[in-house]
Image 1 (tube, helix red, strand yellow):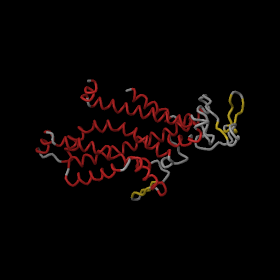
Image 2 (spheres, rainbow, N blue to C red; image 1 turned 45 degrees about the horizontal axis):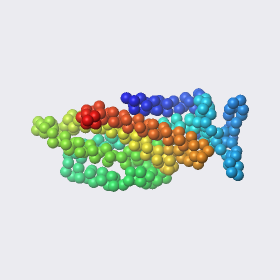
Image 3 (cartoon, rainbow, N blue to C red; image 1 turned 180 degrees about the vertical axis):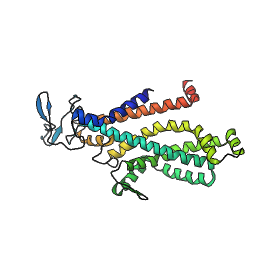
Image 4 (tube, helix red, strand yellow; image 1 turned 30 degrees about the vertical axis):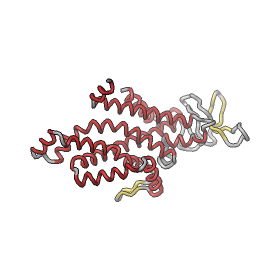
Length: 309
């Protein structure tokens, strides 16, 4: 419940990003503001100040004001409000993580049920596909697909997904994680298929569809529910890694990974630009993992009992 509360708090704060940007901070977090100024302690201050270190070349963004009404976490190297971008970036990261996890779990459920229940050639073909995807390092495969599709987008029949669409990283991340959910589900279905109640259903003449929907799926559902929050965390981390490498969320959109990338050159002068999204990623991922552990304990009391012995 604590993990769920923290996760819902993060989601709520990120959903309020437009309210904060437009009604409280009065900033546009996606537009450069190189010549912008703010009033700080009664004085007009440039957002990008002349660098006073070394040869005095370049500019340094203003640091955190700790005033919620303007530039709470300071500005980045484009003069944009870091806190406003942090909230908008959270919307993208959470959307991609949740949507890709739903698509991944749905596809994995269908494929895992088919492979485990029907067996034979269907199981062999699907298992080999899982093995091929499994053989690639997960981030290397996601990076390769992103680099290939980033230039031309994705064409599925009459549907075209542009390179800048958030749907592109959603589909890429969902596809690369399917075997990580489908293989355990296949093993569960193989075990369930040998149970007496399944053999009784087959003996009574029940159709394959009815057996899958009424007998096997309800018994496999707890495992799917446990996987869902864990996959949201994994997918969010993958999205952040891709966006950090500039092959995930594309400008002018923002995500926690792109903000960390923006703050990479400011680590020594304005480290909060990179630290803030990193902390948000850590807090959200930990909350989702705790939520997944709680869901496992709730659906599998034996696992909880074993952990307490």
